[in-house]
View 1 (cartoon, rainbow, N blue to C red):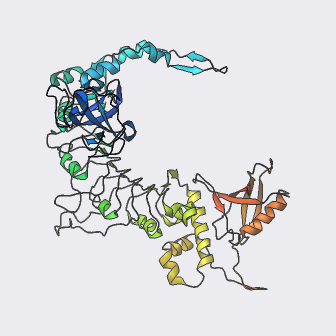
View 2 (cartoon, rainbow, N blue to C red):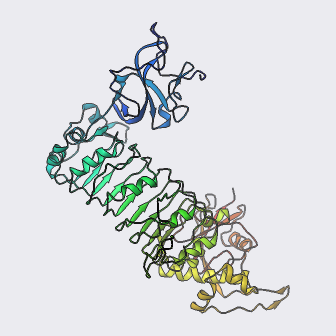
Length: 556
C-alpha cells in the first residue's frame, strides 16, 4: 500500500467497488499499448493497467505519459498501487473514451494532406498590427499547393509526425498510394513493433529516408526485412540500445546516416569482435545527448571505414585519445589489412558539451589522419573561466584543423594564433626545455616554421627582464554604457605591457575620470570576449597579438 496521491478520478465515488486486479475483457486497450489522449496527438503514453478502481464503477486505463509533467501521480490512488509509473507525476487513471489507440498510415496521410483546416485554425492565423489589432493572414496559392499535395502518387516526401499513427493499414494499398515516396517522417507516433516498420518499408521500395524519432520501439528487431534503399535512418529518443543497433545493421546494408540522439546509450555493446564491423557505407553517426563517458567505447567505432562525421555532443566524455595502430581485430586476427588506420576517414568530430579538461586530449587530435573539423566548446578545456585555454591556443595546438567550434580557421588566423602561442610559451618556459617539449609538443616545430628567434633577457635596473619581440598594434573600443560614445583608438604597445598598465592608459586615452575600466579580449571565431582580470599579466602572456581588439567596459 502507498500513501494517498492526487488523482484525476472524480471526487465522489459510486457505491460499486471492486479490487484492483479486475479487468474488463471488452476494453479496447491492453497493457503495453501505445496511446494518445483523445483530441491531443502530442500527449502520448503507454498503457500500464486496465481494470477497475476501488470506489468507482466501470473500467479505467492507467497510462504512464512520456512527458513527465502530464500526469498526476505515480500509478496509485487512495492508497492502492495499480501500477508503477516512471515518476511521481507521470501517471493518470482515465476512462477509455478519453484515449485513442491511433490510426493507420494511410488514414494519417488523408488527415495531413487532404484534410481541410477548421474555422478555429484559420482564425489563429494572424499578426498584430501597430495598434495591436489582429490582421488575418491569407495564404497565396493555398489551393494550388493543397491540390499538388493531395496527389499522393506524385509525392516524394511525406511528414506524418505526431498524428497518432499506430499501424501500417492494408499493406497492398501503401505501395499503390505512394509509389514514388523517398522520404517519410513518422516521428512522434504510436508505433512500437519493428514488424510494422518492416511492412511499411517493404511497401515503399523507393524509400531512402526514414524518421522514427519519439516512437517507443520494442527491443525485438528480428522482424525487419532487408531494406536495401534506406540511406538515412533517424532513431532519436526511441529507447534503442547498441545491441539493437547491431541487429538492425544487417537490415540496412547501405545506410549512410544513422541518428541515435537521446537514447541513454552508455556503451557500445558487441557480441563478438572488439570493434564494430559492417556499416560499410556509413558516413555519419550521431550519438549526441547520450550517456557515453568512456572513450574506450568510442574506440570501438574506429573500424567503420567510411565514417566521416561522428557527433558526440552532450555526452559525459572526459578525455580523448587516438587508438594504437594495429592490423589486428582485437582477437589476434590479421583481418584489418596493412593499410588500416583507426578512424581513417573521420573528418568531423563534434565533442561540445562534454567534460574534457586536459590539453593532451586536444593534442591527440593531431593523430587522427583525416580530421579537419572539431567542436570543443562547452568543455572545461576551452572555457577560460574554468582554467581552459583561449581559441588561439587551441588553433596552434591543432595542426590540421580548418574548422574549430563551427567557425572556419582562416590562414591568417592560424598564422597569428601560432605566433602568439609561441611567444606566450617563450615567456613561461625560458630554461626548462624538457618540460616545455612535454607540455607543448608543437612549440619547436612552430618556432622554427615562423622563424621566431630566441630573445635574450637583458639586465635592467631591477635585475633580469624578458624583452618583448616588438610593438603590437591593439585597437581599443569603449563599450561601457556610462563611458559615452568614443571613437575606437589603435595604439602600438610593447607586448610586455601589463593589463594593469593598459587600464591606466585607457583612463588617460579616453579621459575616464570616475569610471574604472574592465578589459575584454575580443577574438575572431569566439562568440564571447575573454575577461582580462590578471593585472600583473603582460599582453604577450595572455595572448594579445598584433591587430587584436580589446573592449573597454566599466566595473559595475
